[in-house]
Length: 137
Figure (cartoon, helix red, strand yellow):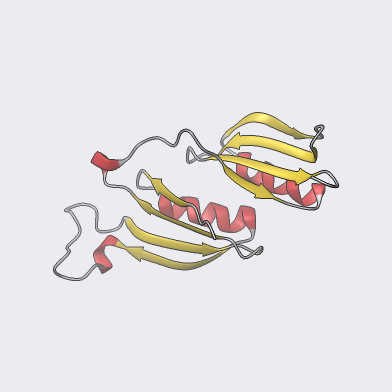
């Protein structure tokens, strides 16, 4: 099983709250840097950042993430998180929710391979693809 692990620039908690609403996920864990063992203290000023978060999605997928230290953060590039949804109305709803506040790369619409497909980058900089495959695909 593959599970994406995303890194944020100190907005992991906001992103996970957004995804819980947009995708119907359940946040299973949200550990702050201040909760680390005493021998691994948080860097000064980073106590409230998220060291590890885990979300279960209705389809059984798991999404994990954390806030990257500034010197280790890189803008997301070279990938997209892909969601496959059977129902086009549900696919379009999820696509619109993820695109809210972000940017649409390819509007959600019918394609030769899908009943509905769209690409966007959410307001946290994460690229998404929502796909409702055509029969037999």
